[in-house]
Length: 108
Image (cartoon, rainbow, N blue to C red; front, side, top):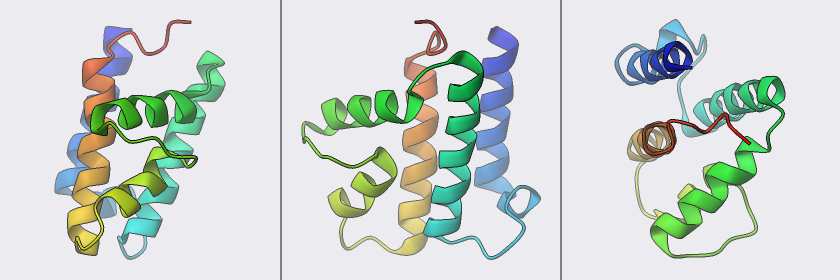
């Protein structure tokens, strides 16, 4: 699974440096949110996990704040006042950090 984690790492590098290679229309928080939710859902489907929920619970513990929304929406509320570009980087970095801190995320 090291190969998969390396591919995930590369995806986040591309999202940070050249997002238009992946997102083919204007890069905004909602388009990035949609992409990352779909990306995570794809991984979740393959590994039969509720990865959105796992990332959301991880994020809630990390910031010590409960929410009834997924991490992609919780970021918007938690970081009120940030610009769209700042929120985009927070979303990318937060999602990437989940995978870095949980290298065996794919296991049950």
